[in-house]
View (cartoon, rainbow, N blue to C red):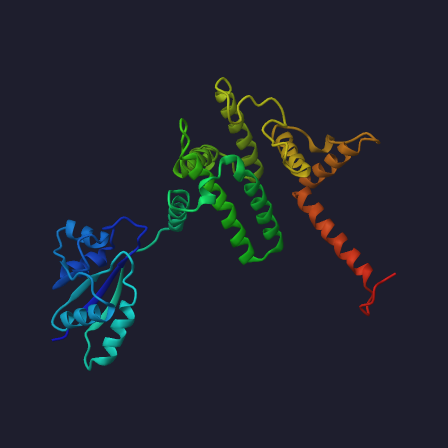
Length: 340
């Protein structure tokens, strides 16, 4: 009688023991459940659940594969994978299968799958390693203040990548922005009196998103994008009023410019101001300028862009790109010779 060898693998990002029903059924039905040693997280979870686990100790991949195949030749065996993924084991088992005339059936059974966002845990762990003793000396000496320039730079590079439409570039630059958030949160963990960590950062934005989307998470009645924007501004105003006596954040809002960073590019600042003006009942059509007020003329154009559902910032960037292309064309005629 030939048995079966099941290689039980689980995600290292999921709590040990959170297995699928199929995985527990395979464990219950096995004639033998084997693992490297008692310190392995998955094996320990299986043992804690009442399934006996035998430990084979440290074996080379060829020796381990032969042992597993010999045991599977006479019964159903489950190998509970090690935390390091047992490098070389599957190749060694493939060699054993090729060598044997009538090998046992071999299957890989995934006991737990990563949930969306699981790799964020890896990023947090990597950042912790870099920042901790024995990690990277450059990362260890950074502060909130020294990292600001990288946050700004990476944000601009991400915006440029999005404009390019290059999907690989977009993914890379968004990763760089994400790193800056995780890095800042890791620095914040070490504050002497007011520490917070990446979970606090995530928790704060989750609460804000739920609070500002009552039409999704509660009984709000905003049905169009315009209604959502108006409701968002009303909720923000109520939040600011509630926080006003305490200071910090966006409290004490006393005008369209409140809370808009001075370093924000002027057209983006104009768009935010006009959006607030629009959401609070202002008429964009009234935004105009005197004949000699070029600044207000630019703001009026931004208002026209918003009325058309377009971004003034994006429109100017596109116009500059067209201007650049036209200037380059003027430098070269159709024969490739410099133009006049």
